[in-house]
Structure formats: C-alpha cells, structure tokens
Length: 258
Ligand SMILES: [Zn+2]
Image (cartoon, rainbow, N blue to C red):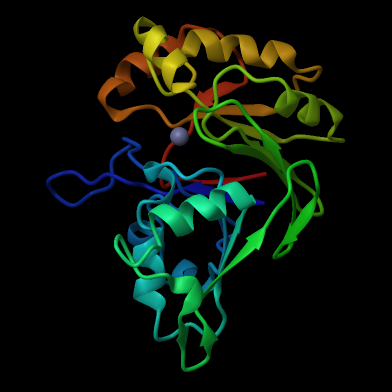
C-alpha cells in the first residue's frame, strides 16, 4: 500500500514545504482520505484516477478544495466523484458547502456522461469497500462528528486517527485488527497550549504520548500529522523528545509504502 500526505503550502519560489495547512492523504494513487488539498496537489495521473474520497469530518482544513476538485473535473468526469462519509457529515456538506451559496450542489448536477458527484453513506463500525480497499470507520472524540479509519488491502492495514482528543473506541478497534502496519495520528498543538487543545478536542505531544499506551501492540509505525503550521518546530521538538522509538513526523509529499 502506497500513501502520500499531499503538500499544502508553497514557499516564495513555488516549492512545497513541510507545513501542513490542509489534510488529504492519497492511497495507491486512487483513493483520498479527506480532501483539504485535493484540487491543488495531485499529480495529473492521480487527478485522472482519484474518484473515491472518504471524508472524516466537515472541518474546512479537511474539505477546503473538494468543491474546486469537482468543479475542475466537471465536464470530463465519466463517472461521479464518490464521497464516502457518515450521514451526519454528508448533511453538513450539503447544508454548509454545496448549498448553492458557497458552491453549487454538485450532487444534483450532471454532465454529458451522468452525475458528477454522489454521496455513499457509511456507518461506523461496519466494514465497507472503497475501490480495492476495506475500510472501517470508528467515531473519535473531536468537536464535530468525526471518524478515524482503519484501511486494509490484501497485505497491509493502516489507521488514520483524523482529528481527535484522547479517545478509546478507536484504539480498541486497532487492538482487535489482525495487523496494523502504520498509524497516522494527529498532533495539532504544542504542550504549552494544552487548554486550547482540550477545547478544540485535539492532541498535543504530551497527550499523544499517552494514547499508544492504550494499544496492546507495538508492531506499528506511528506518524504524527496535522501539526499546526504556526507551532510546527515546537511540536516536532516535543514529539522527538518523547523518545518513542516507532514515532516519526510524516513528511508531506513523500511516498510511503508498506
Ligand atoms: Zn477538525
């Protein structure tokens, strides 16, 4: 399985930098997890292949360029963009984004070939299929309805925490999985901002450090993501000083394979 966290920041010379403003992972060049930077950072090959997008929650940094992605492909789509999400998240997208005011209601529009965007509701704790992947969504603890994901192909299983504070059910599901190769876990704020992290229902390096203690396994690679760009160097230093051997910081743009 090949996973890339798409870049979402460019420097003055137009080069991608490690700061992560938006969240969008691409699995095997064809399935996206969240859509923050989907319209601006895919390769042209990926742009032709990605037709399934799993949305973990409705926050802007996870869906920012989803409307632009559908818009860009509108005339050429020969199959719809499929949005996999819980009904609560679908309702939020229809009410707050694809509402004719912020952007067109693409779920009602067709091009010459048929519908351009469709929702595929998913239920938490029930495995479903997306392209060649088996996916299970588990509710996590954020300030809006949010799911973490466990994603498997024939050989590899990875997990995405999405945005969450300390949580329980997600770790229980990971403990039950036959294998987990990698975990992408959020680490939004530095330790000095614990109060804000608590209010926003997110993690700091100090609170992140306690989450793997809920795991009954240590055979997985853990990668920190979703570090607020304004505090990136501080958070990275704090993560490194935890001394957790299988923990690293995921680099946007790099292709990881398991
Ligand atoms: Zn969020």
